[in-house]
Amino acid sequence: WYCEWAHPFKPDDLRIFMAQDGSRRIFVNAGPIAHFSTGDVTKPLVGLEMSSDEQIHPSGYGFVIESGRFTIIAPTDEIIAEFGQESVTHDLSNKAIIPGFIDAHTHLLWAGDRSNEMRMRQKGMSYSEVAESGGGIRYTVGQTRESGSLNEIGQSRLLMAKNHGTTYIETKSGYGLDTNSELKLLKAYGDLQ
Image (cartoon, rainbow, N blue to C red; front, side, top):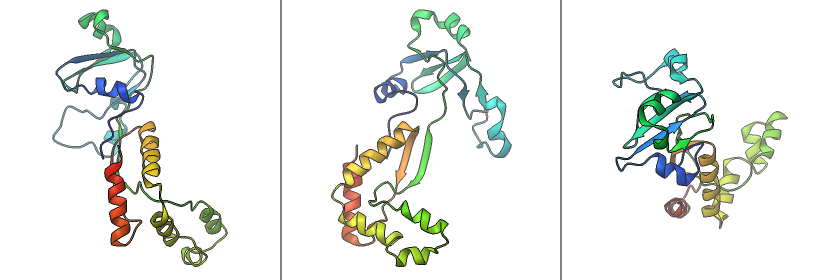
């Protein structure tokens, strides 16, 4: 599932932000801008490279996006000097800019609340003892199989993920544990917007 949204913009703003029509979008007056560009696209950043201060531009910078790609990150005054104040499409009012989160393993659709199990575990109960008392995965599977509101659950969790900066989410089924229940989950995934 690809969520077309990124913090701190509202969903309608992202469609402008990620315009693929060859248009230019100019953003100024950003807060800190975190990025993972080193100039060498042949290898990923690893270890301490990911925590380098060079990966964060300070407040007061802006950026230009052309055809959906960042083409310039520079101080706001330099961007305005090059493109003109009238070309600015978004004043970010010192909002931080961070890459969107990628959630590569999510069980988005399941029903039931197992928060009480935390207290059981804190009291020293083993997972087997929790399961024997009616909790654990079997409880979640049972609640999921009986749920008539998987679409609502999924929409709510997708919205929460979007609002917390997730821009790409790969979801899994797995709380049905039989063919019909898994097919029910897959249909609900297909219905999510």
